[in-house]
Length: 320
Image (cartoon, rainbow, N blue to C red; front, side):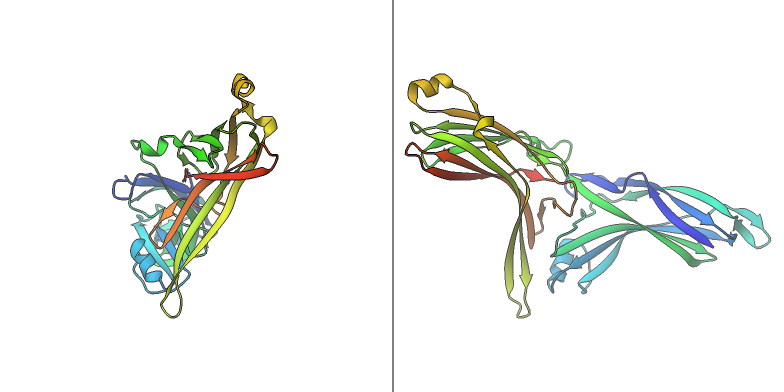
């Protein structure tokens, strides 16, 4: 009897750049065999399998986008397959025999650069990968093992634009000038959105009570009903939020407020993002489904007459 297990140096692979320009990556690990009774003529095969699940009849369009070719709503595809050589054992009268004990066989599996990144935890679409090891004895499969593998795609090392700061500035209702600054547009899973805000009052006697900040995930998808009509669904969820009150606001120019009766404030905040695909999806743009992320900023202003008003703005960092 043979028991099999897969061990990986890393269970995730990151490709840099667009699929047409990305270099291949190597998945490194080993196959661990536990043999309780000797077996003859043993070899194993490795396959990386991609499983696509779509929620509706538009699956054919999904498959075209993701290079899958089938008509079912749940399909699997072998991304890459590699046949190993026969496992070295002890020579016997019945051929080569693998003795009892623990045996470990390292491997390096080259993945092509155009592999589509993992898409998980979205109700409309799911694309998951797993590495499969099949053990054969005398040409007959006797044991299988699987390992979940995640594939990510990040900005190329020579890409400049994603690493530039995201700056948004303007005027809120002729009451205040604002300037938002996110130092880096690309934020990884589990990373932090750093945000600095400069607010300058344009009205005498206006005061800033605080600012509400949210990182919002925006998802849009097109789904066909039984009559063949396409419906666009829109979903949002809050990934992180915080409140910066007046006690944390730093007034930049006390002299300006004294002389002109107007204030100028500088605020900073850190919004940590979830590190799980269940809680935060990557940016996706596949035509029929789009996922984007933005920071929502709501300033709470106390007007000279005493009433409070809210003004808001959005700025869009990328999440990868």
